[in-house]
Image (cartoon, rainbow, N blue to C red; front, top):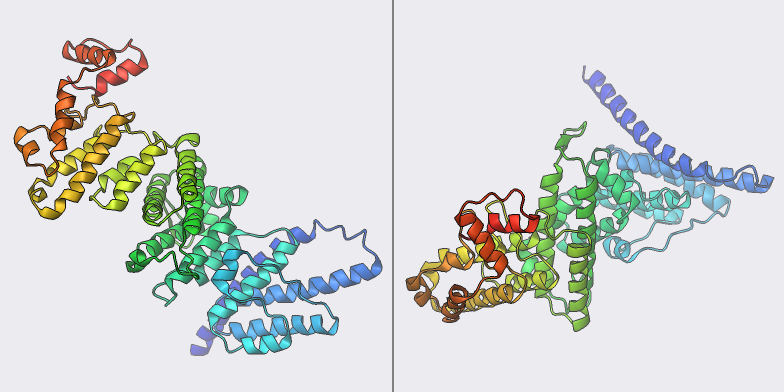
Length: 475
C-alpha cells in the first residue's frame, strides 16, 4: 500500500513538472516562431538548432526548480549539466544580460556560466537555485521577446518576497525585490494584462503591494537613514514606488474586475473597491515617509509636481478613496501628517471634498480637535494646537468653502463653537479665526442658498452649482 501511495505521489509530481515545462516551452515557442528560419544558411540553421536544443535543456532545468519537487537539485542539475557541456564542447557562450539597478541590488549575483560554477551551485540552498532558474528563464525569454511574463513574475514573488519576514529575509532585501517587481510590472501593457486578468497570475501585483505595505509598516520603519551610502530607502527610490502606485491605482480604477473572486486554488482576489482603498493606504504611507525625509528644493518640487499630476491630470481630486479626507481622518498632530496635508493642498487636492457624512477635511479636523478637549490643558499639547491652527488658516486662505455643511447642518468652524471651549484652547488665535467667521459676510451665492433652504423652496430647476450649494450650506 505504501509503495502504491508513493507511486501515485511520484506520478502527481511528474504531471506538475510536465505542466510547468509545457507552459515554459510554449511561451518560448511563440518567440521562436517569429524568427525567419527559412532565410538561414545551412550552417546557421545547424547552429540555431543546437542553441535551441541547449535552451530547451536549460528550460527543462528551470521547470524542475520551479516545480518544488524534492529532487529538484538532482533533476535540474542533470539538465543544466547537459546544456553546459554542449555549450563548452561547441564553444557557445551564454550571452549574459546587463542587470538593472534593482535586479543587481536584489540578487547581488549572476547566472552561472561554466561546469565549475554548476558544481559549486549543487549544495546551495533552494533560494539560490531559484535565482539561477530566474536568470536562465529571463535570458532565454528576452532573446525571443517574451519577457516579462505572468508565470515568471509570479514565481519571482513566491520565492523572493512572499512571507519575507517569516523566512528570515531582511527588510532591505524585501524592499529591493519589491522595487524590482514594480519595474517588471511596468506601467503600460503588461500591467494592464495583470490587472485586468488577475486570476491568471494569482493576482501577483496586489500580492506584491500587500507585502510592500508590510515592509513600510515594519517596526524598523522609523529607523530610515537616508545618509547611509548603501541604503535602498532613499528619496528617489520612494518616488519610484510612489509613481508606480499612482499608475497601478489608475489601472485598477479603469480595468480591474469589480467583484471579489477566487482562483482555482481558492486564492481570494479582492474587489476593485477594496484594492483602491489598499493602494490609497500605501500611497499615504509613502507620502508620509517622503515628507519626513530631508529634501532639496528640486526634490520638493518634483514631489509636488508628481502629486499634482496624479490628482489633477488623472482626475483623482473628487474620487474615492480621497487622500486628503483619509489623512485628515487619521490626523494625530504629528509633524509628518501636518506636512502631508499641507503638501496635498499645495498639489491641488480638493479642500471641499466630502465623505459619506458630507464632512469636509476641515470638518473632520475640527471634530477630532474638539474630541481631544481633555488633552488641551497638557503642556505638550501646544504643538498639536499650533499645527491645527496652521491647517485651519491654510484651508481658509485657499479654496475651502467655509459655508458648506455636514449632515447636521454645521459648517466646519461651527464644530468648535462654544465660548467656554474656545477660551480653554491652548492657542488663542482660535478665537480670532472663529470670530472672523461669525462676523464675516457670505458671498451672494451662499446667501441665496441659505434663503432657499430656509423657505424650503424647490430647487430642481436651479443650476447645478447652486443646487449643490443649497444641499451643502448652512441654514
